[in-house]
Amino acid sequence: MDKLVQELKEKIIATLDLVDLKSTDIGDHDPLVGGELGLDSIDVLEMVILLEKEYGVLIDSKELGVEVFQTITTLAEHVQKNRPQVSA
Image 1 (cartoon, rainbow, N blue to C red):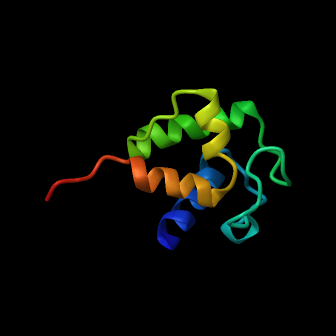
Image 2 (cartoon, one colour):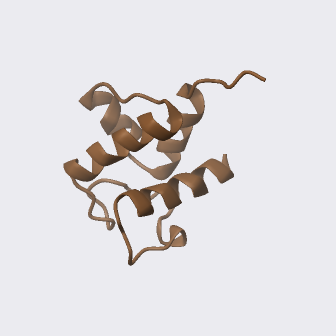
């Protein structure tokens, strides 16, 4: 799970062009939206697209988005539970 959390932090920074941030600046339990990161609804939309494209995970309602985008940890848990399993 730690690897996924780190990967998500790096992808969010790159996708949202948060050039002044490092992955260590994002706490695992810090609020993603409305917190110190200053993410807004457009940023959330970009993250939804990122999750679908990179992980095959859909966020198909506002309610689910509110739940999933609370923290990087809740986001990683959702991705881990819902991404398609790769068959060997």
